[in-house]
Amino acid sequence: MKLRTKRSPAFKAKVALEALREERTSAELASQYQVHPGQIRNWKNIICGNAQELFAIKRNNGDRDKDKFIEELYKQIGQLKVELDWLKKNLELTHREKKLLIDRTNELITITRQTELLGISRSSIYYEPVIDPYDFELMCLIDEQYTKAPFYGSRRMTAILKRL
Image (cartoon, rainbow, N blue to C red; front, side, top):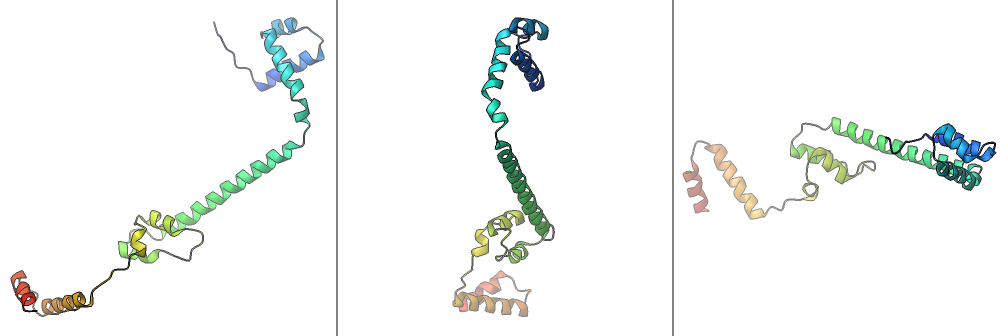
């Protein structure tokens, strides 16, 4: 035996409107439609209680809300399309090249979103390395020595560094 039967809104409205006409009793309608008389009274009361809302102008508000929602969805779709197009042209690059692609003036895609799309950390965009002038001079000397004689091993470089 089926305990609950789901009725469509059209069926409920049809039965409730017949109950409003009062041509038949609730018991007769219940036997005709196989619905409990109490349920028919509930549907009838719902129609009577909400009749004023049927004629209210709130439909336009619902349409406005729907239009606003659709507009928001189109905005999101547009944003995603811009991001996707931007990302497609910037794939398969080194980290340094990806950092150079970050457009700080782009109002449509934030820096945070650009770094997410490129797969790099946001902090690497703002980091500026600080090189001590003495360290820079040492690196230049090492490079100079290595380009003169790249075949020397690490012992030779250690000896050079000890002399400095």
